[in-house]
Image (cartoon, rainbow, N blue to C red; front, side, top):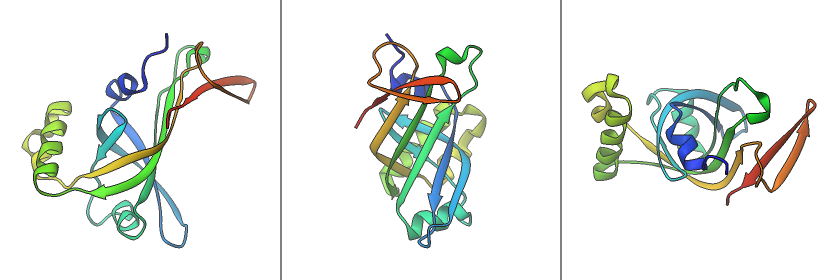
Length: 148
């Protein structure tokens, strides 16, 4: 049985966040994240391109992956959806999640600004039996599950 998508997210530390301006100019940035199931929480600098894009266009996509020692066991997840800017109690709860997940951030995690990516499209690549889609590319058959 393949590792679950939520366990995969918990086992990794960095995602690539993809945003776009209202004119469609793409931008990608690495971010720390925490998750609750498939819902992702992340922080970007307030004066960053990512923050400006999220303010102008409240949708984003994220990818989490690593380089496997055996490519037949490759894994990765792609998630896209609407993004909410958090405040108040919601932001404080996420700050605590980040402080626990990334202890080296210390109390700075409690003083950051957070966003929530609400997934409406999730693809989990795990290359094990039980996948529902096959996507051949570069001589490898990538097996995936579409989760939403």
